[in-house]
Image (cartoon, rainbow, N blue to C red):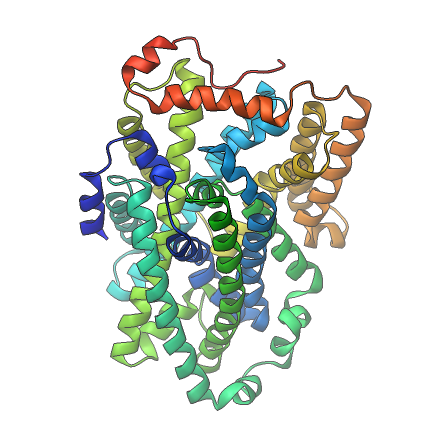
Length: 482
């Protein structure tokens, strides 16, 4: 991967090459990179840990991601025709480029990618610690450094082509692991006998709880709908049809992969039911239960999955910073966007590594921050696409209500149903707030196409040389109602 990064670094000449791979990626490359992006730390480390503790509930994690990916492709692939560079541009078109909605969304989406990057560093550090026996703190620092060296130099072109190879590696590795688990356990019947009966219930609801399973699937599905990394992949497609097909195909692959995760977690429980942390389930298998050749293949597969997801999160964060955050702060576009993106990513990796040093379990971290950061964004995206009467005031109401409900469910005495389903409650209440406020306020004055045309002008200046920027010094990141 380092070699591929160096190869593409010398061939990245334009801003669009670095941030959206020149918008010419074929279906097969996109399917591979989206699949690899979905199967990151949460899936290969956190979800087996959930399956280790609650059986088939571990499959709910990749199931939610795969379902959200397929739905996002089916609904939003049509936005490829507008040649957006970030999800922030798409949100601006739904709400008349209102500055409050757009800037809030941009900062939230940027921070969400930093949170996901933190999760990937945690997972990579866990794998590195299991293999080397080094101190956890040192492993996290090394993991962040290695990921930064791979993803920063070559941009999205490095990411997509290495991710395509990584997807093949991880599917092969986990396929061999699943065969071994079933063979040694006596098939699914033997695995059921070796684990508590509640583990075999549908999606582990008898062990994890119906509300917790539903909340996890909804939270992860909504997070994909509002995920700038998946949008970045769609915007980079060669055609609109390729964008849709690759997202749906990748979603189906990930949903099928969810079965493997459940089997792996329960297999680890069968062999050792007394691990100190559920996140150690798969690393323990690698170090103590698998033959050397399979252990090596699984380690490579885990690393491939985690680094692929980290690459995607990093590129989404870099594109948001250089396209939105930098212009907002500096009141101008960067004269060398590629250089600014690389430097910002270096800082981001340092910050995310520091955060990873103080985080808890992976699944716990994900379930805490997803409802707070992503539910509201998913609500305004779905509403903007389907409910044409939406207004910027309604969007603000949803963006305020969803994190408030999520935080209240986590930290205040609340009914058990609400506490078990913070993502569902936040999405429902946020949707109600958006509809009510939108109907009580004047309709949006600017159409989607009008704002998209304005975004195209800004993007042309942003992607051009410094001379083009000097010809347009007064272009602001977003325009619209104050």
